[in-house]
Amino acid sequence: MTAGRVIRSLAGPSGNERGLVYIGPTLWAIGYGTHLIYQIDTKTGRTIRTLPAPATGCMPLIWDGAKLWSTAFESSTLNQLDPNSGQVTHTLPSPTIRISGVAWDGHMLWLCSYKSKLFYQCDPVTGRVVRSAPTPGTWPSGLACSEDALWHCDYSQSLIYQYDRRSLELIRSFASPGENPFGLAWDGRTLWNADIGTGKIYQIAVD
Image (cartoon, rainbow, N blue to C red):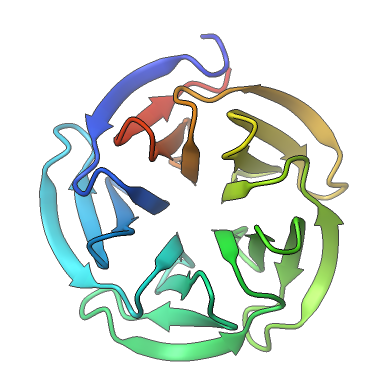
């Protein structure tokens, strides 16, 4: 397979998906204009169910193995959500506003911000920033973690980047399927990428 090759594409339920996370065997996404969280069948694109987003303008979405996390673009807090009701069960201070991507590596939260143009690794209990590093482009718009890698997309560059998660050294980059990538998810083998220009969600080969 070629890195960046599209395996399949689905029509996004709102056409403007921002946050994206894989909770096998389904995808979850936030519709920016609808203020809903969608659970999506990865084979058909059918919406299985919806939950209310915790605030207007929510963008990133991740799963920590038990709960969902999200935040509104202008908010200074991160919200942990019950996946059954969408109710906020815990909040953390965010290191900055305009968080545009969130990921979970099994132990720590990862964030990227359009305002600061930085990656952050944060303690999920206290919100304390463990480390930070600059993003490669001017509009960071999605994060995902695989076993050893941090994956990142940039809306302004139309690129997907792979970093070594420990050293944060750039390994490679390749073109995103659409020009406006916004949201990444890792399913254990491939990436999923939402694009707000095409309104589609793409499954992407990385090998």
